[in-house]
Image (cartoon, rainbow, N blue to C red; front, side):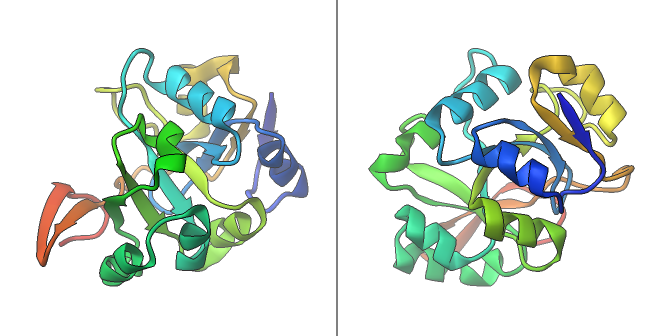
Amino acid sequence: MKIFDSIQNDSLISLIDNGKIGIIPTDTVYGIVASIKFPDSVERLYTTKRPGQKKPGTIIASSAEQLIGMGFNNKEINSGKKYLDMGVSVVIEAPEKLSYLNFSQNSQAVRIIKGGALHNLLIKSGPLITSSANFPGQKTVTSISDARSVFADDLDFYVDGGSLDNSLPSTIIKLNNNNIQILRQGSVKI
C-alpha cells in the first residue's frame, strides 16, 4: 500500500491506470476511487465500501467531453450543464454499456471538476468512480488517518490532502423535465 502527499504524482496515475483503488481528497470530501476503465476495480470498490449493497457511486470527470466520450448523451449533459459547472452531482440516464458502474439502474450521478489538482489528475487518468470514504451510515472521514482506520490495508493507495474537517459531500440532484429534485443537499446550496 502506497501513501502519497499529493494527487499530482505520476506514480499515483500509474496505479490508477493499472486498476488500483484508493482514497484521494476530492473537490468535496475524501473519496474512495477507481478508474472506470476496469470493471473489476469498480466491483472491488463497491464490495470494499458497501458489502452486499447496490448503491452506485458518482463519476467525476474533468469535462463534459470526457462524459460524452464514455457514452453519456450530449443532450442530457447539456441539460444539466449549469449545475455540472457549479460542481453539483447530477443524476442522468446512463448508457447500457456502463451498467457495471450503476448496478444496471440506468442512471448515474456525474460531476465535473473544474480546475485545480483534481482536474489535472482526471485529465491524465480519465473519469473515476468515487464514493465517500466511509462505510454506509458512518461519519465521513476527514483525514487520511481516519480513512486508514476504516479501510486499513484493503486499498492500494492513500493520498493525504490534510484535514477536511469543514468539507461537505457534494450536492446531488436529478432533473425531471424543468424540475430539480434535490437528492442530497451538500457543498453547493440549491
